[in-house]
Amino acid sequence: MSQLYPLLTIDEARVFESEVLGGDELQTLEAMVNAGQAIGIAILNDFQEIRDWSEFPQVLVLAGKGLNSGDAFVACSLMREALEDLQVTVVMTEEESNLSKLAAGAFVKLRTELRDDLEILDVEAYLAQEPVIYDVVLDGLYGHGFRPPLRKSAAELLQHVNNRTDILLKAAIDLPSGLGADKDPDSFVADFTYIPGVAKAPCFNPDNANLVGRVRFLEIDPFLDQSSAERLELVASPRSHMQLNQLRSSQSDKRSYGHCLILAGSNEMPGAAIMATLGSLHAGAGLVTTCTAGNVASQNAGAAPEAMWRALPATNEGGLEMEAARIVVKEAQKCHALLIGPGLILDRTTVAALNRIIREITLPLVLDASALILDIVGSVIDRPSSAGPVILTPHLGEFARLSGVAAANVRNEHLIEFSRKYRAITVLKGSPTRISDGKRCIDVPTGGPVLARGGSGDILAGIVTTLLAQSPEDPLSAAIQAVSWHGASADALARDRGATAVRTTDILPYLSSTLRA
Image 1: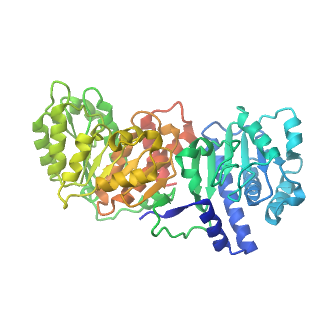
Image 2 (image 1 turned 180 degrees about the vertical axis):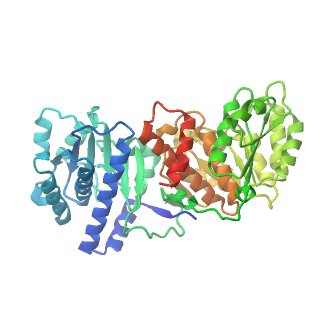
Image 3 (image 1 turned 60 degrees about the vertical axis):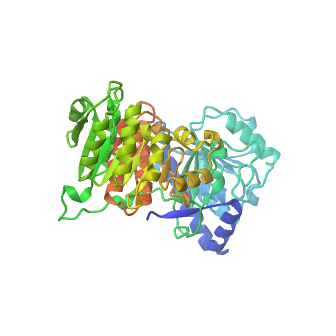
């Protein structure tokens, strides 16, 4: 099972950190340094999604008096090692003499390193100066000890920074300042929120998504060994997929790594079958057989010659004849997992054929895209108890149609209830993606808007199918690892080539490099 971390309320996080650190100054210093360095590395990486660093990078730090400021100072020290002409402006809402001991130590170190490349301002001086163009603003004003309302000077500072459109990347540490158990209307608005060590529930609450931006959960000492027992809401390690990076047995052959059966594609959407097939192949499947309607199989075969393509009898509308069900059921006898859905045309005959397939085949099953309607998903309940596990991969709109819960109102409890009802693992694609096995809900904090393009879900479905075929006894881990791997590969693509001028299939080569990173 992938490493899972508990998702804690603000009060729980405060108590937990206190218990782990135990008031020990050296241990607290270690945690602050580890957090700050992890944040610095993450910013260096994530900025690459926008552009290369300029010759003289400018970073604006919003500093209070606590450890979040210390984290920010350490992050800047690390960034200075990579960017030798980095220039930092620190805007302080407190007198320097009021800094906590550890934050003050980190600030002294930063001042020694930067010398003339460090500018220190109070809020009044910052607001009065001519605007400077900053590459990054790093919010370290408040941590989980914050309680609304914001002080006047902090509110004015955050209002000003939030309104600036010339800052390329806005990053929050732990929580955007102003957000806690409650939130202030002038809270910091982040592009990324970097959460070191302890996952805080407000950062994963959909109601706060406009403040938090993308969540980066950073694993650091001394918080690596957290118990997730009996927790309903969890966060998966962003490195969950790295467990897949192992030497393959010298005695293995193609049958050792799963035979995936994919039912996808149509004359209207032939590419969906290609992308699902390529996702499965790139995830390491030993064998892939793709069944698709009509002449699509022969058209697609050249795009993925490693797969075996099987044509199915098609209706005039481009759907599947009932005879297709018999063919797929027969093909399934030699396979280890079945994917149904990407790019299928749903007419009445196709729905009947798919229902027959789902009820008769006991293979582990993945339903995606066109297969995510109640008339098909309902057949899952009728599968025999001896049948393999089922994984559903809806996006938010599809889940809303299936569950009857408005998209804006979907919460973890709805995901858990739905998964329990259909005895399935549900992968709710989003930012972040949430996974439920009917007992708990797990956030997977990788991936970003580079995935917001047609076909990325088809590739994910293929990856899920391969990992499910290889470990049907642990479908939850297969789902977590697939989502983590897919998301991390998307992050690598975006950092290398940006999130705009790329194609969906550009993610495929990054599956290899991300796994080996």
